[in-house]
Amino acid sequence: MLTAMPNQNKTSSGCHPANFCLNLRQKSVPGTTPATARRPAMRIDRTHRPWLRLSLILLIPAAGWYIVDALHGGAALNGPSGASITGIVFGSIGLAFMIYAALLGARKRLRSVPLGRTQWWMRGHLWLGTLALFFVWLHAGFHLGGSLTLWTMILLYVVVASGWFGALLQHFLPEYLTHQVPNETIYDQIPLVLHHLQDEADDVAAICGPLNSEPLESWRAQRASAIMDRERGELITSRRREELLTALKAAPAVGSGELRRFYVHDLKPYIRGEAPSDSAMANVRRIPLLFEQKRNLLPEALHPALKDLEQICNERRQLILQKRIHHWLHGWLFVHIPISMALLALAVVHVFLAIKYSTIKHF
Image (tube, rainbow, N blue to C red; front, side, top):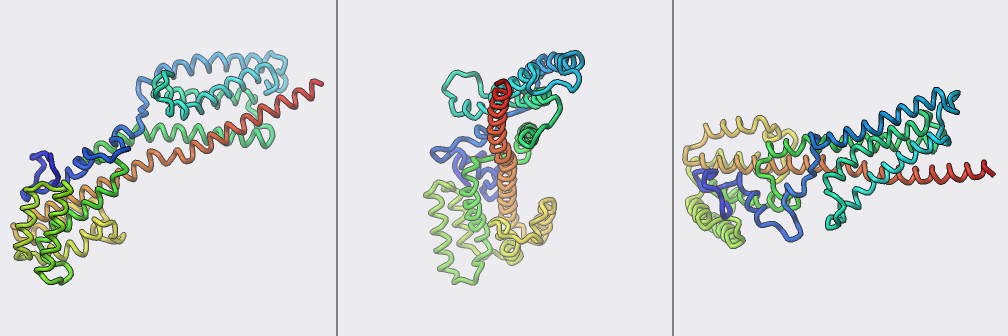
């Protein structure tokens, strides 16, 4: 279909729908980056072990200190409070971890500054952000206190939970995407690729003749002009152009009525994203069977065109799946980031009020 296409994936008609995205990806739009480069990279693997060990090194002594202070310290009767030395130390550590986690966004924007690898910051963001929750528990003595403390804790729970949810998504979904979408393309170019797939499908279906009872000669002239435009745009090869034009001159092919009905009623709405929910193409698992049934009804001369249309449908399915996975990979940030900012703001207010009231109490 496009230039520089691998021959092993070519159908008998010379069409390469399954490789359509690969060629558009090579012609990337200025300002865009490859899909794999823009995909979040955060796998929970052995590279997290140092952070796990550090977390245990920090948490176990802190828990021991809290227990000793709760049983034998000055606040043994009611347990440590946020205003005690123990509480202040734990609260300061928890706040420091939250600030570190919040600096990840700044680190990503300062890639040229030698502040350590972004991957290192991301792992620290996950583990130290989680540790912040435990140190805040120790800071508060496992008491929620007033409404400000309550809402601060609620936001902290949401931030930590959404952070781990996002980490798990980034661990599992990229590998799933690699297996399910072998022809992954640049995300920003998916609408463009879908549009070109529609044009390719119309060119393939032209073997059936006019779809709307147009005069044959004027329809052929219009279709030929569209095919030539696609070649000038380097969307198809000259060989593919000649194949399409040859099929166009012989259209409508003998016995193409069934293929025309299939394309108009099922394939074209699906490829254009206009198929109703009860369409025969709505069930992805049934699509191969549906094409096999049509193949048994069509003359052998039309099998290559049917195969091309099947590949185009598979390509569209992959692109829609890529969009859905992209939304999952990035959508959780619309919850995580704003709530993280609100949490940091409440934490600052909490510290300010604690210092203010402790100063008033002292005087």
